[in-house]
Length: 237
Image (tube, rainbow, N blue to C red; front, side, top):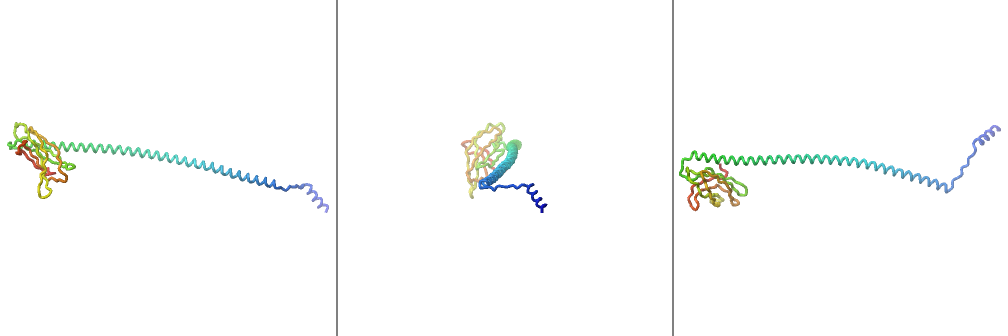
């Protein structure tokens, strides 16, 4: 018993008793305030971190968007350059086509002139009848637009050392709308021929007229005598 008593006494003297005072209402309010403050600080810290994290993400997104805009602008500029180059090539091709068309028209006109000159010289070589004062070596009528017809006539004199022919040219279109042939006469034209003369011009038919033939005559002014005549169907060579 004594030994047990001594052990309990030694234990009590080795670990002194500590007395904790009980917290009152003010202490508890202070603890609650501290807890609320800690929570508020935690919330503020979370909001701040989220704000700065969102700013960084937005900065990255805007940077990527700017790079995309630059890339699209570069691609657009390249496409515009290619389009301009293609447009320039098209203009060059159109200019070349127009030049070729002009050259073709000039060549066709030169060919027609050559045919007329050839017909004239053939007439001079083969004609045995020198009784006609003047005659047609060639007679051509070609359709244009808006009822317009273009004529090319080659007139030669059939008498050596003949004086200059001073006369008139009359052109008539023969139109046959039904069973009756209608003559469409055009204004008389004064002509002068010395050995060889090329006559060229245009006549306009009434709307809807479809000529079956054209007739060109040469005569003397104020006289009913016809000295030369040629008749040509449209499109005939």
